[in-house]
Image (tube, rainbow, N blue to C red; front, side, top):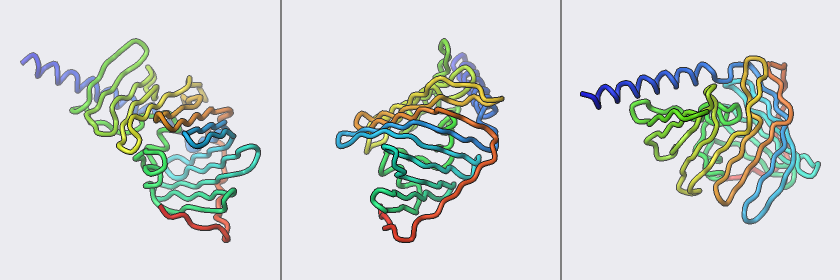
Length: 227
């Protein structure tokens, strides 16, 4: 009887936590980010800067510059990823399988939007998730083949995550300090580390609910990539 009561109480506490996390999600219409980006793997490393614009639940648009040269532009919707590379004059127009192949992240649009805004990366089932309440954080441990652990701040935003994907092994996610922008808590950036691949994103300037444009057109003389 005691175990049943304890399990029921734990589930109720976790359900309440997940409701709070949902209530504290990014809720503005748009988000405009200027950022610095660095990437490394055993074959290469580079750093640069760029922009990301989000129309909530609809569009993630961005451009990346390396060594002062415009390199990549992308336009992502819930059903499609489109990008082109100005250096090798190639483009991609397809589904989210690209993220699995290139970064080992089985993400959809919502996962990617949550990654950028610092919200709970993926949904979890209360009946199959452990919960620890520790000083300064909540720790969720789902019984999930991909998600191993997610830590949340006291204000219900992502602090860190540990994931596993067969092609990459362990994937570690860590967020920088959050800052208030009106009613929104926005991360200062994040890093992803797979052991071989390392991505660091630093948010330099953030605007919320700004009127934004999302211009994107693949040049006609670029070669389509197949994955």
